[in-house]
Length: 77
Image 1 (cartoon, one colour):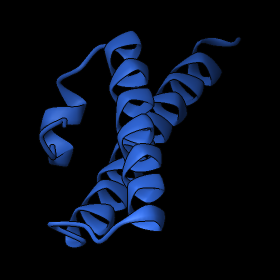
Image 2 (cartoon, rainbow, N blue to C red):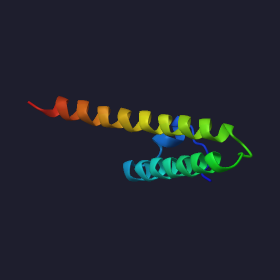
Image 3 (cartoon, rainbow, N blue to C red):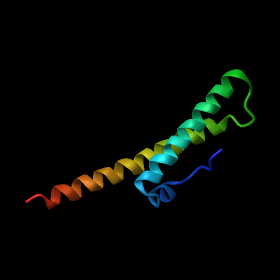
């Protein structure tokens, strides 16, 4: 399973790496939810941790997109 990252670590990733990491976290969450539906989890708090990590990553992604949009808007004459 992937290690949980904080926002600072997400900001250090390139856009492609960030997209890959978010996809990886979502896959882990899906697998964990499927396993939870069949059997009892060893660490059920992991679901919550993954959801929050995905939200952090999406927030950073949106910040970078918003920053790129505002930079492009400033360059338009």
